[in-house]
Every structure is written in structure tokens, then in C-alpha cells.
Length: 126
Image (tube, rainbow, N blue to C red; front, side, top):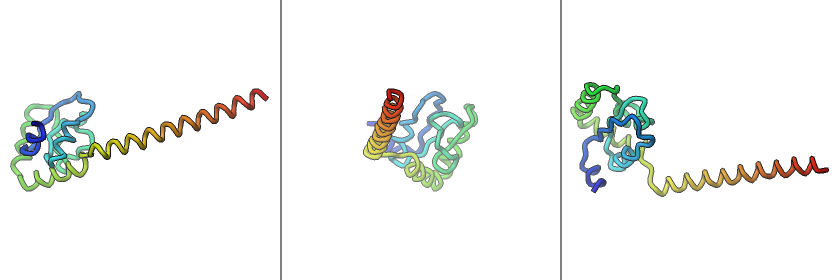
């Protein structure tokens, strides 16, 4: 159901201050739907106002004004949604690839540290 809502939406309005990862932002971006977020919030991280989303001060008045401004220029709203898709969306496949790459790096770092420890302890034992 949520994909259908995102596909039909003109704008995501997400005034959360405390979400630690804006998955809803990524889901909306998958459908080229721009969002309005609060400045300096976790959900607003990576958003450049008017480029790949919209940022508002944390007041009801300013959040409403940002929504009205975004919806009043449909041509720009479409561009911002396309940019949101470009900048915020990541497929599960790409996410898995990044995670796998990071896990390999962690294993490599661990092995290198273990080798240093083994070299150090063998010098001490001699």
C-alpha cells in the first residue's frame, strides 16, 4: 500500500526531529517524490533546500509556508523530486553491496591488527 501512496504523492511532509534514519525519505525518493523536512534534523540530513528536498525551520508556520511554496511551483517540484531520487534513493541491492564491502574492510582490519599483535608478542617471547 505504501508504494502506491508514494507513487501518487506530490510531496512528503515529514516534520520529525527524532527519526535517526529517514527511510520514509528514501522510499518517497524512489518514486521521485520530494520531501519537506526540519532543518538540522536527522531526516533532513543530506537535503539541500530547493535542490533535492525542502528544509523548514521548526515552526508550524514556516513548515506550512514551505509546503505551500513547494506545491505552488509544480515544474520545480518535479525537478526537486527527480533530484531527491538521484541523491537520496538507494536500492536494496546497492545497499547490500555497500554493506558487504564494509564487512570485508572490517575483517581485513581485524586480521591486520591480529597480525600486529602476533608479531609483537613473538618479539616479547624471544
